[in-house]
Length: 176
Image 1 (spheres, rainbow, N blue to C red):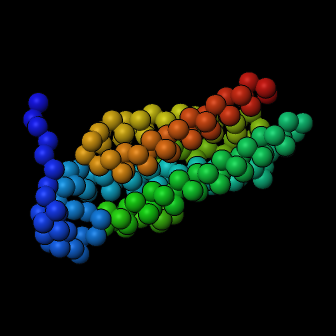
Image 2: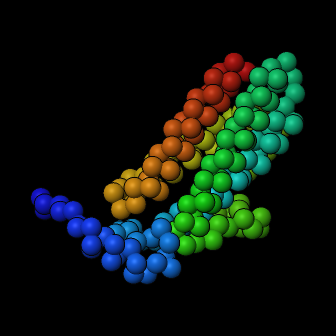
């Protein structure tokens, strides 16, 4: 195992002044930035597709148990939009451009947009989408490893909330 050493202050200062136009991306960035940007943009598309599906489900929910589900749909839509904002912010920090082109969203999204006709179908499709996001984000976290701790932590935070969403949808589905 190699021994890690810390840079002296003068070296840190000198490195910070070189390539200052790269913003937050310093010489110490070890990940394949283009690949990370691709993964971030695919995840952004996934989150935006989920926002749209949850919003539709919020407005379309009907039946005896609809109010509980509709409330969860709206809460999840809001949280998925927050995830999208964080992903877009990270893309910009890494010198990329977040992709918001509606024509590309469904092509790049890991989750599908399946509307569902009944409340049970809606909840089922939301649970499937959450399970896709969970597996996808877990794999991304493993892929990133120690190469980009900031992006890895972002995905870890989003993953934790996606697991909560899946748990919520599983509970509602069981009650239907």
